[in-house]
Image 1 (cartoon, one colour):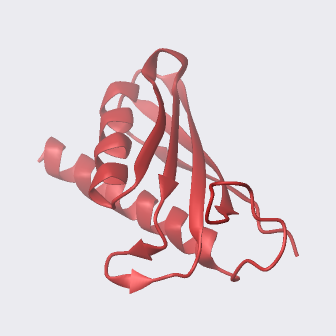
Image 2 (image 1 turned 135 degrees about the vertical axis):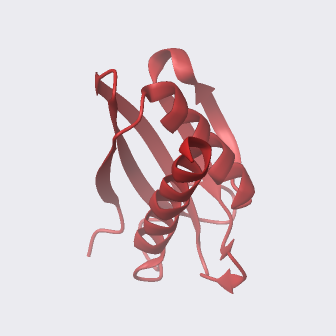
Length: 119
């Protein structure tokens, strides 16, 4: 069973707003920003094994890229995978569903942050 996961979500907002929301949400979710490169539309984050008060059991790395197909829409692409205690890609023994949960929560939080800033 592959532990890696790729997911995408389109937001009806410009790139700058989506990038800023993703960056802030990752920090609020206690993620450690590893790569902050808005010029190349890249954001890499290491997420803790605790998320919103729940213990998930594994750390995750999210490699996020952004596609600004038009000025009013941005697609957020996430490639995520579990990490071991020293930050290396976990190839076996990972708990199922952890990366999927982390990605889903990040998508939800970005959506909320965008709605708050627009409203």
